[in-house]
Amino acid sequence: MSNMTYFDELKRTMEWVAEQQNTLFVGQTVAGPGTFMFQTLRDLPKEKTLEMPINESFQMQFTIGLALAGYTPISVYPRQNFLLLATADMVNMLDKIPAISDNKVLPKMIIRVASGPYKPVHPGHQHIGNYAEGFKKLFDWIEVVELEEPEDVFPTYKHALEREDNRATLIIEHGNYYNDK
Image (cartoon, rainbow, N blue to C red; front, side, top):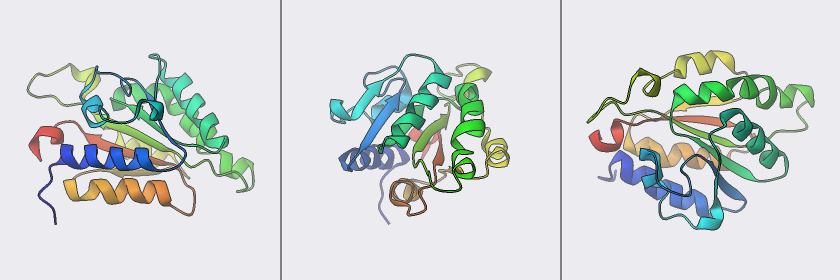
């Protein structure tokens, strides 16, 4: 296996995802700096990124629309604490579209989120939450995957992008691993 770090694998993987047809990165600090996650996106082609205002619910609704229109959006939320603001849209819309449509509409998308790093500087408790277990209990159709090791990064995103069942995938990264692993 490679000696790539967690960060290196994320950066390499995001560049690979951007090369795939119909992918679009949507979210806060996807087109410009502002959070630790941007460093993994900094070399993406600008036409593959769409910066969003800080409006988490609108962002989720917008990316669901992109998925319904045939794109494979990667909806980026730098902190799980703030993804909670879009959780109603995930539970009541994205997760229910297959059931409502009798499995005729399967909006494949990737939701990329992290538990924020608490070192070298602790940003406050509202930035470091990990709600993976809660998310797993909320969804019937959306798959929730936590990225623990560098070697898991590429296969997880590749599977989410190429999955034939077209399920949406919530991929949870850990901000502290960007420098630790």
